[in-house]
Length: 102
View 1 (cartoon, rainbow, N blue to C red):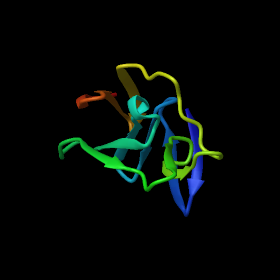
View 2 (view 1 turned 90 degrees about the vertical axis):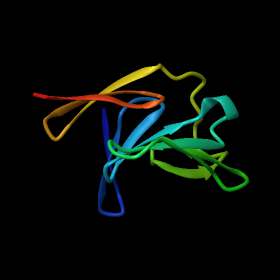
View 3 (view 1 turned 45 degrees about the vertical axis):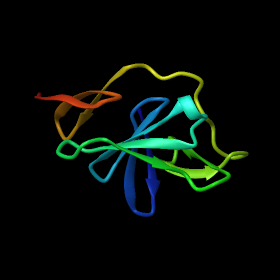
View 4 (view 1 turned 180 degrees about the horizontal axis):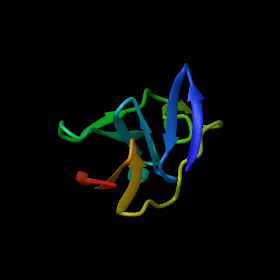
């Protein structure tokens, strides 16, 4: 797990395809070469968002960036786990599956 500082906000790279920032999970869509991404929270349904033309979603900085600077992963696993504020969050590409207290 990587930690990055982005405009005074702590950014957590969960895996090669997902990052966590400000209570939201962002997962790049490798099916369209990262031109879109999924935004998920624990309480709202998943939302697919598109990057502006010429940009792709970069999970390392959790924003859309120029194609020459961002890296698009070739594949993504179907389930991820992250420990956030002492809770284990288990989620799939469809959204949050469960939260377990530690």
